[in-house]
Length: 352
Ligand SMILES: Cc1cc2nc3c(=O)[nH]c(=O)nc-3n(C[C@H](O)[C@H](O)[C@H](O)COP(=O)(O)O)c2cc1C
Image (tube, rainbow, N blue to C red; front, side, top):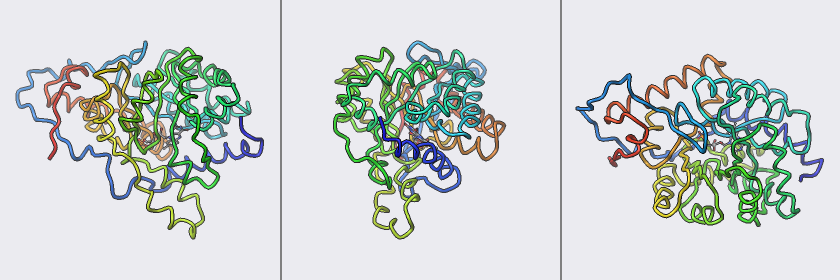
């Protein structure tokens, strides 16, 4: 799949990415995900008992206690074992779904397999999905070796496979790949041969309606817009360049489709297609989660704020953050008179 030389880079690159995400300010600078542009209509007569609000939902054939996923982040180096264990424990405790980070490293080398396996061990029945990059999937497709991906599905007994589209990140990456041919064919081949649902996600630059339409035409079961406004992966990669090389890449720091715009575009396809829509990119609190759902998402997902809280403050800090996010989401449901996630999804949002 990758040369030995390239593979040696993967564990240290992943660790470098995590450290930059936790230690540096790598969010968008002058654009937001857009949640601040939208407001719920306040309902002064909710006719609801807060204690009866039901936030359970289902994703493929599993039940989530909260309509929230921990986005794909890490695995494949020594310290990732502790991080993934902490994230998976929180996912299990709150009944969230969880994605593991790109398992490219695990396909070539068994050394850090425990850092991936721990997720399923911590949540035996929860919704877990594996992850691979578009470039790697296309390379396997050209080698007629898509079935090799079964190894990273079996590693965590994954319920689904996420394929991430990251052309901006690869362009900005000092050692990034610039060949994005055959990606759609690779996605189609995954849908046809792997026997589990395929989620296609961005990593923070968003998925447009047109791209979503092409993905749905090959049978993709879920789309995670992973829009602009939260973690800037251009930003992360720019910081990995030498200082003198950064200025010419800087104009791309804020590139992408803000999350709310991506959601509003892609949800229109629900009229003609049946698929799961995931809202993510720049979600920082439970009110954002509620707005993502009201914009058409079936579930929301969060990446950087969760790993940052775990690494800065341990499992206690992560649990407090998630507790707050869940309560905030329920506050929004109470204040809009929405007893269930289905009712919340029907609420109107206004621009102001
Ligand atoms: C530390 C870190 C590592 C990530 N690694 C991956 C990855 O391996 N695969 C992937 O699809 N996305 C990866 N992402 C992207 C996230 O899944 C998510 O799409 C993106 O960060 C936007 O969400 P956010 O604004 O909530 O951080 C990573 C994000 C972070 C913060």
